[in-house]
Image 1 (cartoon, helix red, strand yellow):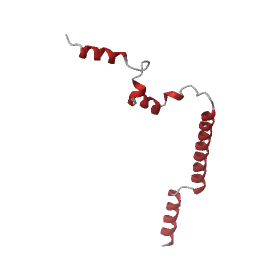
Image 2: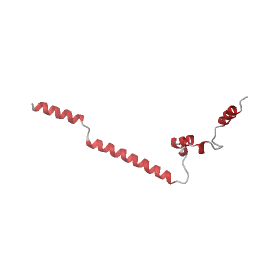
Image 3: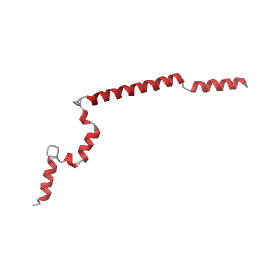
Image 4: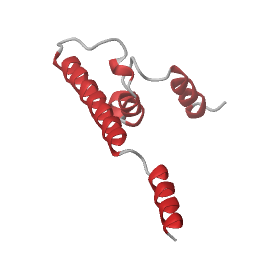
Length: 91
């Protein structure tokens, strides 16, 4: 009977992950996140934005759904004007 218990104990211990390795992976992940956060904070402190800052998805989506921004002359789609002229002046 002792053999079966010893076998089961060894099997369970082999299947369990090592707590030291798990702790090391968690610490590495946290340190990586902390480094990324520090870099982001450093970028935010600059007066000029780095290349690609304004191409974030949040900024682009705001340009699309906010009519006050999307309908200004420099951003308005010229084809929208052509479509409006076509439908407003039927022949």
